[in-house]
Image (cartoon, rainbow, N blue to C red):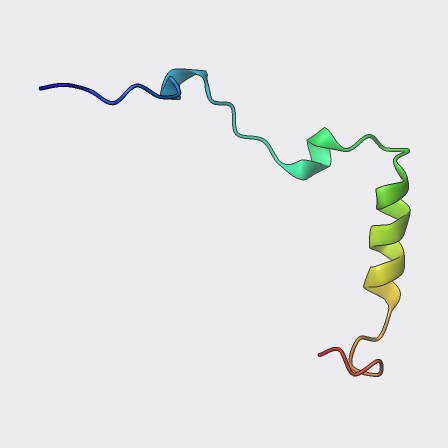
Length: 45
């Protein structure tokens, strides 16, 4: 039976975004800022 070539599943490493984003990255500030916003008051939710 022929196989379909692709990514070797034994080489895949699963990780979360927290490990991928450095502690001093600006996106962490933006994330904290958005978390503090009242989205219901802004009529987003």
